[in-house]
Image 1 (spheres, helix red, strand yellow):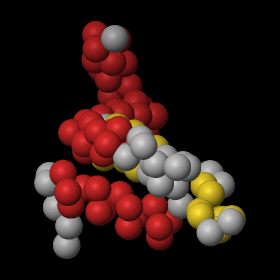
Image 2: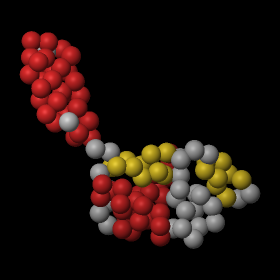
Image 3: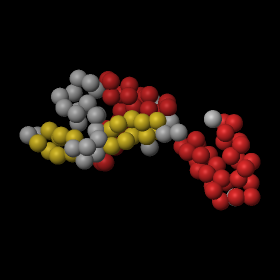
Image 4: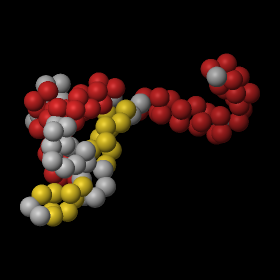
Length: 107
């Protein structure tokens, strides 16, 4: 298993993910990316992925430059908390006024 905390292994991981999951067409002996896909993770993973793409900028095409992967930051914990708050607001009507005050104070 590859470790994304090590730069060389992160590059291998991105290359493998691009080869397996990015829609591409073989044209004139090279691959051409049809549509890039998201490569999500935390902020550190996104930074490492962008740095790896920067290292491969001298490639001949999008596939060689690993541009089939679009690094994005996914804040999973914030989304889960937002869903929990929405559940409390819309399902627990008994406590609706309290939760709306909490949300108002957060904004």
